[in-house]
Image (cartoon, rainbow, N blue to C red; front, side, top):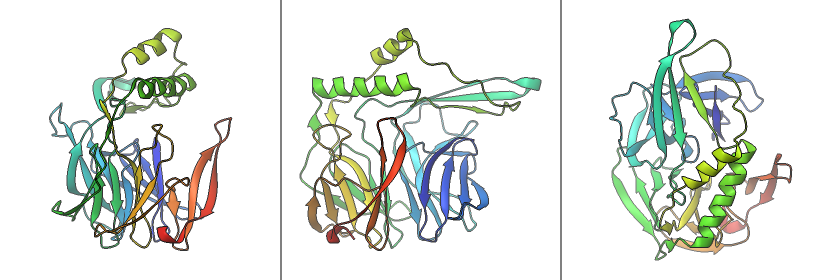
Length: 309
């Protein structure tokens, strides 16, 4: 079991993506377990790119699991619709793969074949795959360094592009040093290290010890960087169907300006100093996940500006 992402569907279903189960666990909002939904050997993405679909299911990025027909070294990952009311997952689009994934096989307890999947980070400042589902069921995607949102239907046909004349900026030495410091803090704390073992059985895997100074130095030395900083770093679709597109801030990772755009491409305005919410309600409330000095997460609820709703 390896839960990675969570969302609440418009029908109140609580969805937890689980790399270990190759699918999703569904719950009611009171915490009652409903059922598991598998994705036919496809591994849900570890972050980003997961949205509720009005048909009753989720749209997100995936990776073929072990034994799949995808050739080693394939440079794309699929964006798929996984229905929860029956039917098979369907591919919508393919986006560039930035994560570095390696896999190996071995023998576990009792002679069982095991497989380890190691997911390495992409080069720093690689464009995120941003996914949003519009009220009509079409899908908004952004996966390049520029300010471009592509709207596609469920067959992958491009319907239109939403663009603004803003380019990715060049990466500076200050950007690289800030990224190294952030990676150093993450790795030293034990976060950011995910290892999945499939098929071994026989109890829990042993805990991985903290990284030594030498290991940490090696990780820092192996970091790679893109030459440009992507123009966009986040995207949400409001319950009314507006696209909230967050531009990259002055410091990468800090909240940036949020543009409000209609699904047809009409620019409505920009909000600053608020940041992109983690979830929104039809009544205009927004939830933000924040962390205190001890790293403990808590949720802040705010009322959104009228133009966001």
